[in-house]
Image (cartoon, rainbow, N blue to C red):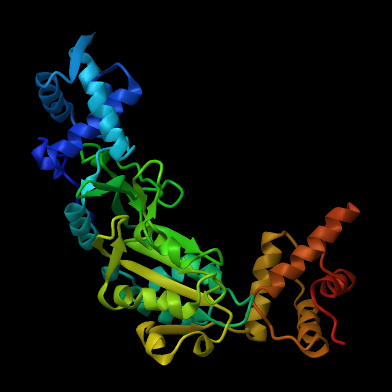
Amino acid sequence: MMIKMINAPRTADETGIRRKVLEDLTLKTMYLMGELSLHDLAEHLRLSLRIVDEVFQHLRKDQLCQVTGMAGAVHRIVLTAEGKGRALEALGINQYVGPLPVSLVDYVNQVRAQTVRRLDVSPPAVQRAFEHLVLEPQVLRQLGSALVSGKAIFLYGPSGTGKTTVAETLSGLFEQENVWIPHAVEDDGQIITIYDPLVHHKVDDPATRDSDERWVLCHRPRVVVGGELTIEMLELQFNPVTKYYAAPSQLKANNGLLIMDDFGRQRVRPEELLNRWVAPLDRGIDFLTLAGGKKIEVPFDVLVAFATNLDPATLVDEAFLRRIQTKIRLGSVSREFFHEICRRVCAENKLHYDQGLIEELIDTIANDLGQDLRPCYPRDIVNQVCWAARYEGRPAQLDHESLSHACRTYFISPS
């Protein structure tokens, strides 16, 4: 899906933001930055010089700022005493001084235009994305179908079967598509910051240089939350000092992937979490509450991947499981797949792969230790071999002794 460039506004009215919000942000920025040129101000607000000059003329007419000189062909300006008073009043309302926000209406429209629910996913693309993993063809088919549906995915099975790795790899299918993320969103004077460089990975595309710079072109986001999650973290994060909001995880994940890792082990009960997300999962919308109690409606355009090593039937009731329409069990692997994983791990670690030796390892794990063949075992056991070799100051190699030592260290011996 091709994402269209967002045209830069040509006038203050075309920003979609009320003039008072724009002027207050300008005053706050000037107060904190001191004397600056209109060019510097435009760069900070991510607006054109034409719009900033338009705002400056209004502020100058109201005697809130004055010219101190020239920087090339543009004015250098500073606040008057009255302007500083107005700036302090605006800072008392909120201390946001970043790029000019976009309106909530424009944000909602853009999220819908670049929805994650219409991904163009094909079997070859899925195979390429997961080629570094050894998965059954049926699992790949289920994953591809889930991506096409845009609905939630439940990945379940014992620990060490690759659920988190599979969930994180899903984002690889998004890398060919980019989306626009706003620095911040404004609604009725309330400001919510959205863009997070820790989550949103910026794309430098020369073709978008003339776009609206209040938006950042990024890869589709991938957000991972684990055991630290609380129900409060799913709401707008209001800072009582700065008096504006940070977006919760699901809002930052819009148009992308949200991974609920170790689902069932969060600080919030599973049923409480899913009760919170009944409407979002069903209708694709979420309701967030502002500090004064007002609720705003925002898109919930997120592919949610729940990963758990607990039995889904014990976590949530049937009604909730129905809302998560794709359920994929990842369990133990066959001997053939175990060999293939071992081949790859040996190649990565520059170790000689001995099929007979690995067959004996499989017998030890399955028969002597009574363990299923889990996909994590080859890498974990080879790591033990490499660590022991490094400790002893010798080259690592797979042999009966090194594998036996690794198994004794890694596995709990049966009583």
